[in-house]
Amino acid sequence: MSAARTIIRVTRAYGRAVEGEAVVSGEGFSPRYDLDRWSGIITKPGHELEGLNIRDKVLFFPTAKGGVAAGWAFHDILSKGFAPKALIFGVTNPVMVQGAVFAGVTITEGWSRDPRSCLRTGDLVHVDPAARTIVVLRRAGPAGR
Amino acid sequence: MKLTREEHAMLRGARGEPVRRALEFQLEVGRFYDAECFVPVTNAHMMGDIEVMGDSGLDYLRRLARERARSQVPTTTNARCFDFAHVDRLGQDAGEAAKERELIECLRRMNIMTTDTCINYQTLYQPHLGEHLAWGDTGTVIWANSVCGARSNFEAGPAAMAAAMTGRTPAYGFHLDRQRKGSFIVKVATELDDVAEWGALGKLVGEPRQSYYEVPVFTGIRRTPTADELKHLGASLASYGSMAMFHMVGVTPEAPTLSAALGGRKPKVTVRVTRAAIERVFAGYRNPDGTCNFVVFSGPQQSLLELKTLAELFEGRRVHPGTTVFVTTANGVLSAARALGYVQKLEAAGVTLLEGVCVYILQDLTRMRVRNGWTNMISNSAKIVNTITAHRFNTILRRTADCVEIACTGVFR
Image (cartoon, rainbow over all chains, first blue to last red; front, top):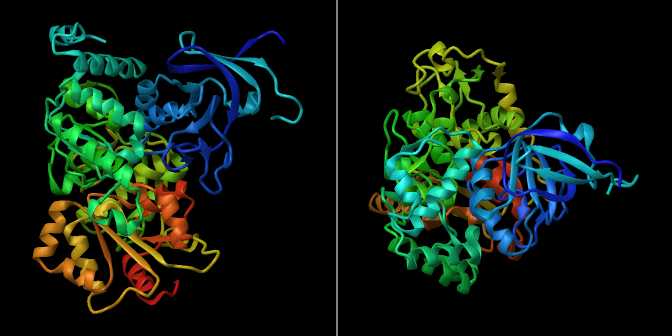
């Protein structure tokens, strides 16, 4: 493992420190509009991450889409075993925050650098809400994922 | 956060364990947003149904009901996933319907009014300028903030329920003056007629600027919009843009002038919406297999005036064989529409009226889609065209009269 270094500082954060595989999306997210909550797979036709299972991933999204369903949805997918490790948003909305807090899923908002400029899907990252940092632990292989 | 003596007592359990847990949850959310204090709320509106809550959510409610948790302010519920009169016809799961009944019973034991409507602002409660609320369903929030000048954030199910139990919510976001100022200007350079065109405007403005912190200021509106037009605009902005407030100069209460709406904030950008842009929205939908056997008037539920319009358009006609038309509304609206004869006209045409639900949250919708051979969903609601996509519908926005024409002829246009 190469020396870990802080890649991104986040503005706001809640939850436990977690490690997981990064999934970096250029498109926003809603667990109601985009996700099949019975499989954990993003099913919205044409979504940049269509077909991806969010289970145990550290998900990077630039924005949150509307929809109050997220409040129960994260709790529901947690109980079904599909919860992500963390939700990292450029800009989020209170529904995502309330849903994540209710389910005990780590969530952050605001980033010092666009993750698409410094992270690739498949990188192993460490998210530390108390320190408000995201660190890369291991880079993905050349294939990216 | 700065807490009152009462709030400290609540955290010590003076008002019971459910209130203590609810306030702790609200504190975490408040800390995330650097809220300085709580504000009392007069009204809560929550989303809670078995489709979105799942078994874990039902367990959570059972526990709260057992612990005798009770809402402290009038609390109503949003549209749900079952109209019990239609469970068999829609082929929905009887076991899940039984869970939904139990869920409703739990909510009632908690002093929550299971009104099952996403148009509470048209049917149940009209808040006033400056009134603090804890409302869920993004369409209700953007209406309260924009049209009434009331103050609410998007409050998801657990958050609205927590606010109902504690009678307060953390003071961040749209409870604060600073977030309510306009952040960019939208010059509307065209007349808008049908509700679908107002929804298209919301898509054009919201989709490229998804952010809870953006507050568009509409100018150039050439005539007084109706409540239903503002409803579709707001629901669309909230859905595509995650936005919780807009101003409309000369129309909404915090926008008597452009400078009042901006409140000293420099607008980031001025966007111009032309007739051509609105037409491009409608031209942008594809119908890959040419089918048009599923037409929906829902999301938000229909007002009495919308039902009147639909009854007039469907009167004397028949839904095309093989086509399904769903119209959803609230209990009170349905009752009035029946008294006025609108329901009879719609049912005579073969339209299915569903009460207390919204189509995109119907339990088992994905299987219903497959079983009925629905690949496309056609609607006059820009919101539902966006929200139903997780069920893998191809969606198409059309004006109200066009939707009725498609429904009755089976010909896509």
